[in-house]
Image (cartoon, rainbow, N blue to C red; front, side):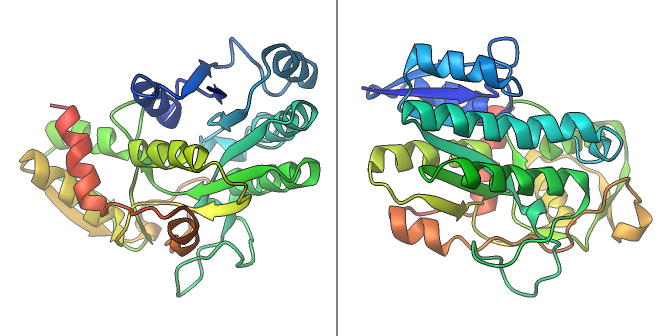
Length: 284
């Protein structure tokens, strides 16, 4: 029986892991959120890890308010940099293997080909900067880690683009959605399944991996598909990023190359529209 700690258990990915835990007989899960464990407090992390003796820690905790991070830099740094560092220190002391979830925002989004794990990083904004420094902090502390970069995460749990579109589609007759940012939507349940499969694989292929669903889309394509599946009649107009200014800049291209994770862990990745359909069925 493998003992697994999941931090940030009330977020999208943490909630999906909780859902999947009901069918996992080989794993013993402990789910915590900030009220149970403040990952920015090193003393608390070490005490928690030493007491419980975890085989794995899956860190789903993160500061993800991309625009707010620009003015809330201190908190974003604590959660996205010091938090992962503390978990890495706790993991090292107790020989725990650390899984950490990162983001496409560690890249500027200027590539013309899908990003591989070994391509140079150069983050956009405070959110991307803190997530990249969080990766680096982990690598400075331990070698027994898996960092999984993902993008455009959504779920039937929590707040996300899918839920926002469903709400707006029912409130309005017309919407403008950005068409010149390219990536791939990622169903959090698919990612959760892959993480558990990696643990079950039980081989030490540590390092950085990319995961999203298969295929390519713009936010406009994503929105159009949501409305088509749910039979919501709303006019969706494609608009450029320049027409929707935000505090933080977004990557214009965040397609992730998943060749490494597919090859090493022998997994197949669902096409994004298929996964979206599965998720939307749960929202009926």
